[in-house]
Image (cartoon, rainbow, N blue to C red; front, top):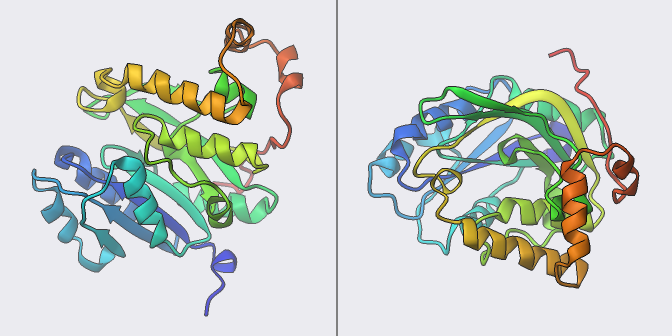
Length: 272
């Protein structure tokens, strides 16, 4: 049997739910990657807009299709990754995109940095029509900074080793707004080594129907963030935390010395 760590198979899970307008572009952005060993898993709990038919049209090019009800996005991702057999994982919403060469860059990075458990690349926020609105450069992902809103990263440009995911609490199905951040900060809290790949890997689409675009989940998002804060630090938010949030967002260089350890600085020197 092949050793997945040696071959660096990458498993990508896409969540699909009534986003047919964008779905084909998302799927093609994964299937057109030049990396030779990609396992693609698509989860759709019950779309009614033709998305399932679109997914089915790809046949065996999509390694696994999960068509069953779930309890939300986090539950769907857990189901998808239960089927994954790669050494490295990533996930992509049906309205987002991977950029060309992204997975080759990720595989080369992990092979060259065996101490790294989770890597964050750069990318773009785009609008409904795909026009770029903002460039995001990943940086400063530590427990303290995440909890105080002082970091920057894109979920779509973040990848992690299967063994780190297996040791994590996995996606919290009670979290309806920031299940990705909760997973990554939980990994960091457990000692996962975070690194940064200086390359654009993905595009995050914000539109009127997305959680980020609609604003409909703002109060739930705040509640989820406070729950994560209390769970990881064992106390409630206080006035000193308001100060930390202000200072971190001010980008003070001196504050970086206070960050929790096990953050690695690394660059993409693979020649891509």
